[in-house]
Image 1 (spheres, rainbow, N blue to C red):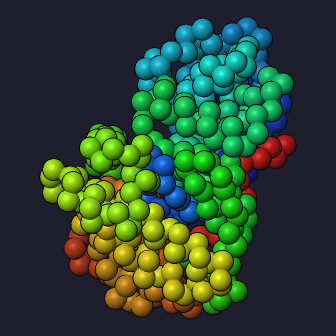
Image 2: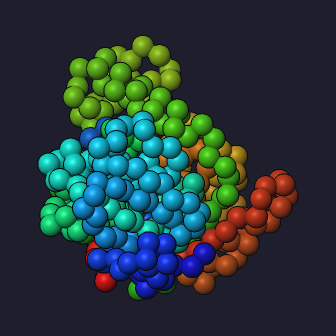
Amino acid sequence: MTAGPSPSACADAFRDAYGHEPEGVWIAPGRINLIGEHTDYNDGFVLPVALPHALAAAAARRTDGVVRLRSRQSGEEFATRTSDLVPGSVPGWAAYPAGALWALAESGVRIDGLDLMVDSTIPSGTGLSSSAALTCATVLAAAHTHGASPDPARVAVLAQQAENGFVGMPCGIMDQSASMLATAGHALFMDTRSLETEQVPFDLAGRGLALLVVDTRAPHRHVDGAYAERRRSCEEAARVLGVPALRDVTAEGLPAALEALPDAVSRRRVRHVVTENERVLETVALLRSGDVHRVGPLFTASHASMRDDYEITVPEVDTAVDALLAAGALGARMTGGGFGGCVIALVEAQERESCLEAVRAAYRERGFAEPAGFTALPAQGARRVV
Ligand code: GLA
Protein backbone atom coordinates (compact mmCIF):
# COMPACT_ATOMS: atom_id res chain seq x y z
CA MET A 1 0.00 0.00 0.00
CA THR A 2 1.32 3.44 -0.89
CA ALA A 3 0.51 6.34 1.41
CA GLY A 4 -1.06 9.54 0.12
CA PRO A 5 -2.34 10.26 -3.41
CA SER A 6 -0.48 12.71 -5.66
CA PRO A 7 -2.42 16.01 -5.97
CA SER A 8 -0.67 16.84 -9.24
CA ALA A 9 -1.54 13.46 -10.77
CA CYS A 10 -5.15 14.05 -9.77
CA ALA A 11 -5.07 17.52 -11.37
CA ASP A 12 -3.53 16.01 -14.54
CA ALA A 13 -6.26 13.37 -14.69
CA PHE A 14 -8.83 16.15 -14.30
CA ARG A 15 -7.35 18.09 -17.26
CA ASP A 16 -7.22 14.95 -19.41
CA ALA A 17 -10.83 14.07 -18.66
CA TYR A 18 -12.48 17.46 -18.87
CA GLY A 19 -10.12 19.55 -21.04
CA HIS A 20 -9.90 22.47 -18.61
CA GLU A 21 -8.11 23.41 -15.39
CA PRO A 22 -9.36 22.38 -11.92
CA GLU A 23 -9.82 25.24 -9.46
CA GLY A 24 -8.05 23.29 -6.78
CA VAL A 25 -7.28 19.91 -5.24
CA TRP A 26 -8.59 18.88 -1.83
CA ILE A 27 -7.36 15.94 0.25
CA ALA A 28 -9.30 13.96 2.87
CA PRO A 29 -7.67 11.04 4.73
CA GLY A 30 -8.91 7.62 5.76
CA ARG A 31 -8.81 6.63 9.41
CA ILE A 32 -8.36 3.84 11.84
CA ASN A 33 -10.23 3.89 15.11
CA LEU A 34 -7.99 3.16 18.11
CA ILE A 35 -10.94 2.22 20.30
CA GLY A 36 -14.65 3.05 20.69
CA GLU A 37 -16.46 0.86 18.16
CA HIS A 38 -20.18 1.21 17.48
CA THR A 39 -20.34 3.84 20.19
CA ASP A 40 -20.82 6.88 17.94
CA TYR A 41 -24.49 6.27 17.11
CA ASN A 42 -25.05 5.70 20.82
CA ASP A 43 -23.87 9.25 21.68
CA GLY A 44 -20.66 7.74 23.10
CA PHE A 45 -16.90 8.21 22.83
CA VAL A 46 -14.48 7.45 19.98
CA LEU A 47 -10.72 7.76 19.48
CA PRO A 48 -9.74 7.62 15.79
CA VAL A 49 -6.54 8.72 14.06
CA ALA A 50 -6.27 9.91 10.46
CA LEU A 51 -4.05 7.90 8.11
CA PRO A 52 -1.60 9.07 5.45
CA HIS A 53 -3.78 7.07 3.03
CA ALA A 54 -6.12 9.63 1.54
CA LEU A 55 -8.41 10.67 -1.26
CA ALA A 56 -7.64 13.61 -3.53
CA ALA A 57 -10.43 15.51 -5.30
CA ALA A 58 -9.75 17.96 -8.13
CA ALA A 59 -12.74 20.13 -8.91
CA ALA A 60 -14.07 23.08 -10.85
CA ARG A 61 -17.45 24.78 -10.60
CA ARG A 62 -19.74 24.72 -13.63
CA THR A 63 -22.53 27.19 -14.27
CA ASP A 64 -24.90 25.04 -16.35
CA GLY A 65 -26.37 22.75 -13.67
CA VAL A 66 -24.35 19.76 -14.89
CA VAL A 67 -22.47 17.49 -12.47
CA ARG A 68 -19.76 15.15 -13.76
CA LEU A 69 -18.09 12.75 -11.36
CA ARG A 70 -15.09 10.65 -12.29
CA SER A 71 -12.79 8.32 -10.44
CA ARG A 72 -9.22 7.96 -11.62
CA GLN A 73 -9.27 4.33 -10.49
CA SER A 74 -12.36 3.16 -12.31
CA GLY A 75 -12.18 5.59 -15.23
CA GLU A 76 -15.98 5.71 -15.18
CA GLU A 77 -17.90 8.95 -15.46
CA PHE A 78 -21.26 9.55 -13.84
CA ALA A 79 -23.11 12.61 -15.17
CA THR A 80 -26.31 14.16 -13.86
CA ARG A 81 -27.94 17.52 -13.24
CA THR A 82 -28.04 19.28 -9.87
CA SER A 83 -31.85 19.30 -10.12
CA ASP A 84 -31.86 15.49 -10.40
CA LEU A 85 -29.88 14.85 -7.22
CA VAL A 86 -32.49 13.04 -5.14
CA PRO A 87 -31.79 10.29 -2.59
CA GLY A 88 -31.67 6.86 -4.16
CA SER A 89 -31.13 8.20 -7.68
CA VAL A 90 -27.39 7.52 -8.01
CA PRO A 91 -25.91 4.00 -8.04
CA GLY A 92 -22.46 2.79 -6.94
CA TRP A 93 -19.53 4.90 -5.80
CA ALA A 94 -20.92 8.09 -7.40
CA ALA A 95 -23.71 8.10 -4.78
CA TYR A 96 -21.17 9.37 -2.22
CA PRO A 97 -20.00 12.53 -4.04
CA ALA A 98 -23.54 13.07 -5.38
CA GLY A 99 -24.82 12.80 -1.80
CA ALA A 100 -22.21 15.33 -0.69
CA LEU A 101 -23.54 17.85 -3.24
CA TRP A 102 -27.09 17.06 -2.17
CA ALA A 103 -26.27 17.62 1.53
CA LEU A 104 -24.52 20.90 0.77
CA ALA A 105 -27.50 22.07 -1.31
CA GLU A 106 -29.90 21.03 1.49
CA SER A 107 -27.84 23.18 3.87
CA GLY A 108 -28.54 26.21 1.70
CA VAL A 109 -25.47 26.42 -0.57
CA ARG A 110 -26.60 26.86 -4.17
CA ILE A 111 -24.75 24.37 -6.34
CA ASP A 112 -24.39 25.57 -9.93
CA GLY A 113 -22.68 22.42 -11.23
CA LEU A 114 -19.35 20.68 -10.79
CA ASP A 115 -16.65 18.71 -12.56
CA LEU A 116 -14.93 16.34 -10.11
CA MET A 117 -12.05 13.89 -10.42
CA VAL A 118 -11.14 11.75 -7.45
CA ASP A 119 -8.06 9.62 -6.85
CA SER A 120 -7.58 7.53 -3.74
CA THR A 121 -4.96 5.45 -1.98
CA ILE A 122 -7.42 4.26 0.68
CA PRO A 123 -8.27 0.68 -0.18
CA SER A 124 -12.06 0.49 -0.35
CA GLY A 125 -14.02 -2.14 1.52
CA THR A 126 -11.33 -2.53 4.20
CA GLY A 127 -12.95 -0.45 6.92
CA LEU A 128 -10.49 2.45 6.56
CA SER A 129 -13.27 4.94 5.73
CA SER A 130 -12.75 5.46 2.04
CA SER A 131 -16.37 6.60 1.74
CA ALA A 132 -16.06 9.24 4.47
CA ALA A 133 -12.94 10.59 2.74
CA LEU A 134 -14.89 10.76 -0.52
CA THR A 135 -17.85 12.63 0.94
CA CYS A 136 -15.66 14.97 3.04
CA ALA A 137 -13.40 15.89 0.10
CA THR A 138 -16.42 16.48 -2.15
CA VAL A 139 -18.21 18.69 0.38
CA LEU A 140 -15.02 20.73 0.80
CA ALA A 141 -14.33 21.02 -2.93
CA ALA A 142 -17.92 21.90 -3.82
CA ALA A 143 -18.22 24.39 -0.96
CA HIS A 144 -14.99 26.20 -1.76
CA THR A 145 -15.67 26.37 -5.50
CA HIS A 146 -19.09 27.88 -4.68
CA GLY A 147 -17.75 30.55 -2.34
CA ALA A 148 -18.77 28.81 0.90
CA SER A 149 -16.38 27.88 3.71
CA PRO A 150 -18.09 25.67 6.29
CA ASP A 151 -15.83 24.93 9.26
CA PRO A 152 -14.35 21.40 9.42
CA ALA A 153 -16.83 20.13 12.04
CA ARG A 154 -19.70 21.33 9.87
CA VAL A 155 -18.22 19.58 6.82
CA ALA A 156 -18.16 16.36 8.84
CA VAL A 157 -21.85 16.73 9.66
CA LEU A 158 -22.74 17.40 6.00
CA ALA A 159 -20.69 14.41 4.89
CA GLN A 160 -22.50 12.21 7.42
CA GLN A 161 -25.84 13.54 6.12
CA ALA A 162 -24.77 12.55 2.60
CA GLU A 163 -24.39 8.94 3.79
CA ASN A 164 -27.47 8.89 6.03
CA GLY A 165 -29.88 10.78 3.81
CA PHE A 166 -28.67 10.12 0.27
CA VAL A 167 -26.73 6.85 0.23
CA GLY A 168 -28.90 5.27 2.90
CA MET A 169 -26.11 4.14 5.25
CA PRO A 170 -27.09 4.93 8.87
CA CYS A 171 -23.49 5.57 10.02
CA GLY A 172 -22.47 7.73 12.98
CA ILE A 173 -20.23 10.80 12.89
CA MET A 174 -16.84 9.22 13.74
CA ASP A 175 -15.32 8.61 10.30
CA GLN A 176 -16.17 12.02 8.88
CA SER A 177 -14.92 13.76 12.05
CA ALA A 178 -11.65 11.83 11.92
CA SER A 179 -11.15 12.77 8.29
CA MET A 180 -11.90 16.46 8.92
CA LEU A 181 -10.56 17.14 12.42
CA ALA A 182 -7.65 14.79 13.15
CA THR A 183 -4.15 16.25 13.37
CA ALA A 184 -0.73 14.67 12.77
CA GLY A 185 0.76 12.97 15.81
CA HIS A 186 -2.56 12.88 17.68
CA ALA A 187 -5.61 10.74 18.23
CA LEU A 188 -8.93 12.54 18.10
CA PHE A 189 -10.93 12.01 21.30
CA MET A 190 -14.52 12.87 20.54
CA ASP A 191 -17.72 12.97 22.54
CA THR A 192 -20.24 12.21 19.82
CA ARG A 193 -23.09 13.73 21.86
CA SER A 194 -21.65 17.21 22.38
CA LEU A 195 -19.32 16.90 19.35
CA GLU A 196 -16.54 18.22 21.60
CA THR A 197 -13.09 17.04 20.60
CA GLU A 198 -9.62 16.88 22.13
CA GLN A 199 -6.36 16.19 20.32
CA VAL A 200 -4.59 13.56 22.43
CA PRO A 201 -0.84 13.18 21.75
CA PHE A 202 -0.20 9.76 20.26
CA ASP A 203 3.53 9.22 20.01
CA LEU A 204 4.31 5.55 19.77
CA ALA A 205 7.74 5.79 18.17
CA GLY A 206 9.02 7.80 21.14
CA ARG A 207 8.18 4.78 23.33
CA GLY A 208 9.60 2.16 21.01
CA LEU A 209 6.12 1.06 19.94
CA ALA A 210 4.25 0.91 16.66
CA LEU A 211 0.67 0.53 15.54
CA LEU A 212 0.48 -2.28 13.04
CA VAL A 213 -2.53 -2.35 10.72
CA VAL A 214 -3.38 -5.70 9.16
CA ASP A 215 -5.79 -5.70 6.24
CA THR A 216 -7.39 -9.11 6.65
CA ARG A 217 -8.71 -9.03 3.07
CA ALA A 218 -11.85 -10.69 4.39
CA PRO A 219 -14.69 -9.68 2.10
CA HIS A 220 -17.28 -7.59 3.94
CA ARG A 221 -20.32 -9.78 4.43
CA HIS A 222 -23.80 -8.26 4.87
CA VAL A 223 -22.17 -5.15 6.28
CA ASP A 224 -24.90 -2.59 5.69
CA GLY A 225 -27.82 -4.72 6.85
CA ALA A 226 -26.01 -5.97 9.95
CA TYR A 227 -24.80 -2.46 10.81
CA ALA A 228 -28.33 -1.07 10.60
CA GLU A 229 -29.61 -3.99 12.64
CA ARG A 230 -27.06 -3.33 15.44
CA ARG A 231 -28.02 0.32 15.46
CA ARG A 232 -31.72 -0.49 15.69
CA SER A 233 -31.21 -2.90 18.58
CA CYS A 234 -29.24 -0.24 20.50
CA GLU A 235 -31.99 2.32 19.96
CA GLU A 236 -34.62 -0.17 21.03
CA ALA A 237 -32.62 -1.05 24.18
CA ALA A 238 -32.29 2.66 25.04
CA ARG A 239 -36.06 2.99 24.65
CA VAL A 240 -36.70 0.04 26.95
CA LEU A 241 -34.27 1.46 29.52
CA GLY A 242 -35.85 4.90 29.29
CA VAL A 243 -32.64 6.74 28.39
CA PRO A 244 -32.01 9.06 25.41
CA ALA A 245 -29.10 6.85 24.25
CA LEU A 246 -26.97 3.98 25.58
CA ARG A 247 -24.33 6.58 26.44
CA ASP A 248 -26.52 7.32 29.44
CA VAL A 249 -26.04 3.84 30.91
CA THR A 250 -23.00 4.05 33.20
CA ALA A 251 -20.69 1.21 34.21
CA GLU A 252 -22.25 1.31 37.70
CA GLY A 253 -25.72 1.22 36.20
CA LEU A 254 -24.93 -1.68 33.86
CA PRO A 255 -26.01 -4.62 36.09
CA ALA A 256 -29.43 -3.05 36.69
CA ALA A 257 -29.78 -2.20 33.00
CA LEU A 258 -28.99 -5.78 32.02
CA GLU A 259 -31.64 -7.05 34.41
CA ALA A 260 -34.21 -4.72 32.90
CA LEU A 261 -33.63 -5.93 29.34
CA PRO A 262 -35.92 -8.64 28.03
CA ASP A 263 -33.55 -10.79 25.97
CA ALA A 264 -29.98 -12.09 25.88
CA VAL A 265 -29.12 -10.46 22.55
CA SER A 266 -29.95 -6.94 23.68
CA ARG A 267 -28.12 -7.58 26.96
CA ARG A 268 -25.00 -8.45 24.98
CA ARG A 269 -25.31 -5.40 22.71
CA VAL A 270 -25.75 -3.04 25.66
CA ARG A 271 -22.85 -4.60 27.58
CA HIS A 272 -20.59 -3.98 24.58
CA VAL A 273 -21.54 -0.34 24.22
CA VAL A 274 -21.28 0.50 27.92
CA THR A 275 -17.97 -1.28 28.48
CA GLU A 276 -16.54 0.08 25.21
CA ASN A 277 -17.26 3.66 26.28
CA GLU A 278 -15.40 2.93 29.53
CA ARG A 279 -12.45 1.53 27.57
CA VAL A 280 -12.23 4.70 25.48
CA LEU A 281 -12.07 6.84 28.62
CA GLU A 282 -9.42 4.57 30.14
CA THR A 283 -7.38 4.65 26.92
CA VAL A 284 -7.49 8.44 26.80
CA ALA A 285 -6.37 8.63 30.43
CA LEU A 286 -3.43 6.30 29.70
CA LEU A 287 -2.41 8.30 26.62
CA ARG A 288 -2.58 11.57 28.56
CA SER A 289 -0.32 10.15 31.27
CA GLY A 290 2.09 8.67 28.73
CA ASP A 291 1.38 5.11 29.88
CA VAL A 292 0.92 3.82 26.34
CA HIS A 293 1.99 0.22 26.98
CA ARG A 294 -1.05 -0.31 29.19
CA VAL A 295 -3.39 0.48 26.30
CA GLY A 296 -2.75 -2.98 24.82
CA PRO A 297 -5.05 -4.98 27.15
CA LEU A 298 -7.85 -2.48 26.48
CA PHE A 299 -7.55 -3.18 22.74
CA THR A 300 -7.76 -6.90 23.39
CA ALA A 301 -10.76 -6.52 25.72
CA SER A 302 -12.47 -4.38 23.07
CA HIS A 303 -11.95 -7.14 20.54
CA ALA A 304 -13.39 -9.80 22.82
CA SER A 305 -16.42 -7.58 23.38
CA MET A 306 -16.94 -7.11 19.62
CA ARG A 307 -16.53 -10.84 19.07
CA ASP A 308 -18.67 -12.19 21.92
CA ASP A 309 -21.17 -9.44 22.73
CA TYR A 310 -21.56 -7.33 19.59
CA GLU A 311 -20.95 -10.32 17.30
CA ILE A 312 -19.41 -8.34 14.45
CA THR A 313 -16.15 -10.22 13.86
CA VAL A 314 -15.42 -12.95 11.30
CA PRO A 315 -12.94 -15.87 11.39
CA GLU A 316 -10.22 -13.99 9.45
CA VAL A 317 -10.36 -11.12 11.94
CA ASP A 318 -10.32 -13.35 15.03
CA THR A 319 -7.48 -15.42 13.58
CA ALA A 320 -5.41 -12.27 12.98
CA VAL A 321 -5.99 -11.02 16.54
CA ASP A 322 -5.10 -14.41 18.06
CA ALA A 323 -1.95 -14.71 15.93
CA LEU A 324 -0.83 -11.19 16.80
CA LEU A 325 -1.28 -11.75 20.53
CA ALA A 326 0.50 -15.10 20.36
CA ALA A 327 3.39 -13.38 18.55
CA GLY A 328 3.80 -10.88 21.38
CA ALA A 329 1.57 -7.94 20.46
CA LEU A 330 0.63 -5.89 23.55
CA GLY A 331 -2.97 -5.75 22.33
CA ALA A 332 -4.97 -6.25 19.16
CA ARG A 333 -8.47 -5.56 17.92
CA MET A 334 -10.59 -5.23 14.85
CA THR A 335 -11.11 -1.58 13.86
CA GLY A 336 -14.12 -0.06 12.10
CA GLY A 337 -17.63 -1.27 11.42
CA GLY A 338 -16.76 -4.97 11.39
CA PHE A 339 -17.55 -8.15 9.44
CA GLY A 340 -14.07 -8.08 7.91
CA GLY A 341 -11.74 -5.16 7.28
CA CYS A 342 -8.65 -4.31 9.31
CA VAL A 343 -7.13 -5.34 12.62
CA ILE A 344 -4.80 -3.05 14.58
CA ALA A 345 -2.15 -4.17 17.01
CA LEU A 346 0.03 -2.31 19.47
CA VAL A 347 3.47 -3.87 19.06
CA GLU A 348 7.09 -3.28 20.06
CA ALA A 349 8.51 -1.47 17.02
CA GLN A 350 11.13 -4.15 16.37
CA GLU A 351 8.46 -6.88 16.38
CA ARG A 352 6.34 -5.42 13.60
CA GLU A 353 7.54 -7.82 10.94
CA SER A 354 7.44 -10.94 13.11
CA CYS A 355 3.89 -10.09 14.21
CA LEU A 356 2.76 -9.64 10.60
CA GLU A 357 4.52 -12.85 9.64
CA ALA A 358 2.62 -14.67 12.39
CA VAL A 359 -0.65 -13.55 10.80
CA ARG A 360 0.55 -14.65 7.34
CA ALA A 361 1.46 -18.09 8.70
CA ALA A 362 -1.90 -18.49 10.47
CA TYR A 363 -3.70 -17.48 7.27
CA ARG A 364 -1.74 -19.96 5.18
CA GLU A 365 -2.64 -22.70 7.60
CA ARG A 366 -6.35 -21.89 7.35
CA GLY A 367 -6.37 -21.25 3.61
CA PHE A 368 -7.26 -17.53 3.94
CA ALA A 369 -6.10 -14.97 1.35
CA GLU A 370 -2.69 -13.38 2.06
CA PRO A 371 -3.15 -10.40 4.44
CA ALA A 372 -1.49 -7.00 3.92
CA GLY A 373 0.10 -4.85 6.60
CA PHE A 374 1.42 -1.36 7.24
CA THR A 375 2.39 0.83 10.16
CA ALA A 376 -0.08 3.61 10.95
CA LEU A 377 1.35 7.07 11.50
CA PRO A 378 -1.25 9.57 12.71
CA ALA A 379 -1.67 12.05 9.86
CA GLN A 380 -3.32 15.38 9.23
CA GLY A 381 -7.03 15.81 8.49
CA ALA A 382 -8.63 17.19 5.33
CA ARG A 383 -7.27 20.29 3.60
CA ARG A 384 -6.92 22.13 0.32
CA VAL A 385 -3.55 21.33 -1.21
CA VAL A 386 -3.52 23.15 -4.56
C1 GLA B 1 -18.47 2.59 10.61
C2 GLA B 1 -19.36 3.83 10.74
C3 GLA B 1 -18.98 4.65 11.98
C4 GLA B 1 -18.89 3.79 13.22
C5 GLA B 1 -18.07 2.54 12.96
C6 GLA B 1 -18.09 1.58 14.12
O1 GLA B 1 -17.16 2.97 10.32
O2 GLA B 1 -19.26 4.64 9.60
O3 GLA B 1 -19.89 5.71 12.14
O4 GLA B 1 -20.17 3.48 13.70
O5 GLA B 1 -18.50 1.83 11.80
O6 GLA B 1 -17.45 2.11 15.21
